[in-house]
Image 1 (tube, rainbow, N blue to C red):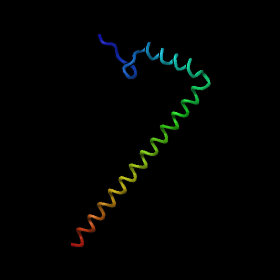
Image 2 (image 1 turned 90 degrees about the vertical axis):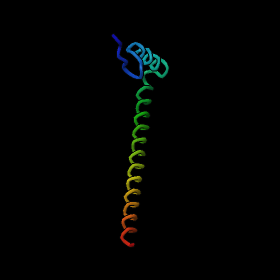
Image 3 (image 1 turned 45 degrees about the horizontal axis):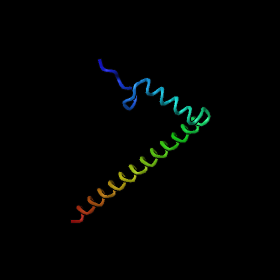
Image 4 (image 1 turned 135 degrees about the vertical axis):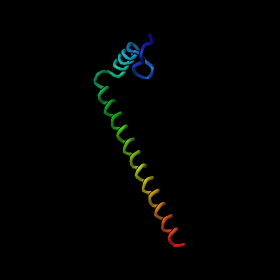
Length: 74
């Protein structure tokens, strides 16, 4: 029977060890600050991604409209 990996190929004991090491390195007070910073970074990334998607869709829409208008002139 094969053991199931929980996260990134790590088992339960490995995740616990990683959490203990992080706690020892950063301390209990710094971890919430790190998580807040990580959350802000992810939020900014998602906002940038949605902005780029919107601009690409708008550009494609404009290109389609120009193509339609160019076809009507001929």
